[in-house]
Image (cartoon, rainbow, N blue to C red; front, side, top):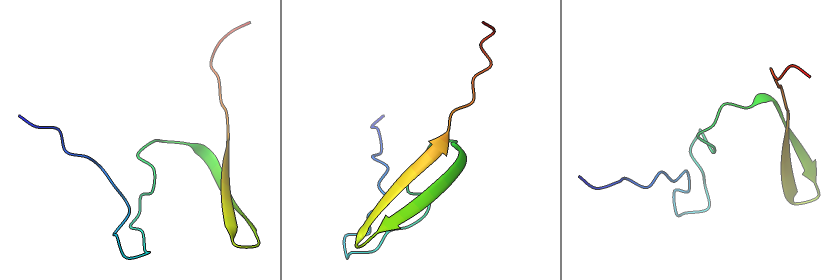
Length: 48
């Protein structure tokens, strides 16, 4: 059995959703000029 590599890059300058294969809380995309940044909230169930 071989592992399949997951890639959102279509190889032609476009991308297919989902870009990330994780579950992030409240993701936000921020654009600064030609650059894009992503941030998300961190939720913890740890009791202090």
